[in-house]
Length: 73
Image (cartoon, rainbow, N blue to C red; front, side, top):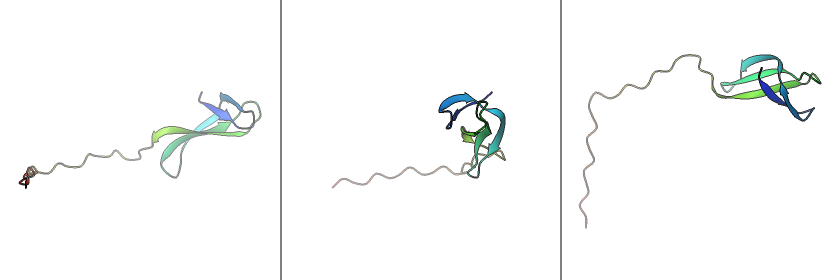
């Protein structure tokens, strides 16, 4: 069971009836209730939720030319 902080009880407790959600900004979170007082508990999880697998950008076919050194004055 996931553990979160209950603001009303001021203690860390296990979240009852936990449901994983995705917030507007794309981050994952767990929402549930405190087993003692019934207050809604919310815990933000690390990382972003990925809806589609992202592909790395394609590498250019021609390599970049090295920069020419400037003459010292």
